[in-house]
Amino acid sequence: MIDFLEKVLEDDTYVLTRDDIVQVLSLDTSIIMKDLCYVSDIIRQRYCGDDVQIRALLEISNICFRNCNYCGVRRDNTLVNRYKMSIDEILESAYGLSKIGFKTLVMQAGESNAHKSEELAYVIKTIKSNFDMAVTLSLGEHPFEVYKQWKEAGADRYLLRHETANDRLYSYLHPDAVLQTRMDALNSLKELGYQVGAGFMVGSPTQSVSDLADDIEFIRDFQPDMVGIGPFIPHCDTPFKDEKAGGSMDTIRAVALVRIVTKNALLPSTTALATILKDGQKAGLMAGCDVVMINFTPLKYKLLYEIYPDKKCMTEDPNTIIEKTTDMIKSIGRNVSNDRGHSRKIKNQ
Ligand code: 5AD
Image: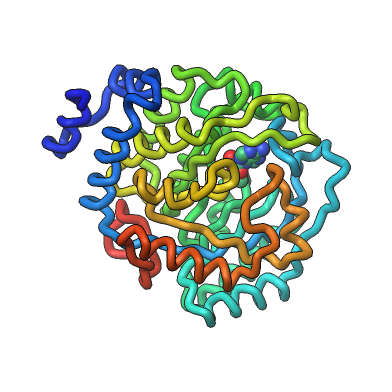
């Protein structure tokens, strides 16, 4: 085993350096993956235990003002039928999910004002005061005041992937945006007391080992409460349609490194990974992940939230997915958590 991986296991205070990170990212996966995943799984066990959090996801709108070159619901993709769930539809779904025992509702949407901020504040308040659930938002960049309004309404967490921590690559992926605005938004969310999720894509067009090392270093230094990591998957109605997808082993390697540098962060085993790799969700959980999200968007909308093609589990009944996911979790010696799964980085929640 490489000496710094051994150090990680023996010395709690050892922090991976950029050189360590670059070395892991540069080696052939056939050489490094066994040892790396062995170490990341032990760290997961030590700092997070064996519980896996299952979150319910609701994609409340696919309307988006942004024009990200990789994303199927980008503004300029006129082939998308746009939708927004009504307030009643959202609340009905939330009620149903709380009844079957979900402790976290993740509401995700394209970045827009399709739902007014006050409407969403009302939704958050209603869910928090009536259905015993944590609320996670994933709605893109908004002004500080709006983040504050939603926090005061009771929102617990906010997922805002940074996508890449490299200035050049960020601008290449997002023709209408700059990295600094993203970083400012993440800092605002932290300051407001949200449990904050960052995250990135692996294998996005032109991404180099050095760019990926920037991501791992950013996560190491920012210490988000949650980190979402998935492979880039080309969508045929975007400027990146002819680009190559990110690799599954490269994605798992990034997940394992993030587990090692965050120790106790909540790491979802993403649908994107499960889309490009058979049993990818299980592979993620075995490499350091401890969260799974199940999509409960009503079917008529779910099919329209196509950020990348052939998303896993699109038409399967979500109740069957719960069963299968539970079985899979047990099959690898893990348990389904029955608490809310708050951040381990924030005390007394
Ligand atoms: N491939 C993989 N991931 C994608 N995302 C958006 N489009 C794609 C794609 N084509 C990811 C982004 C975004 C999250 C919701 O989905 O990282 O933050």
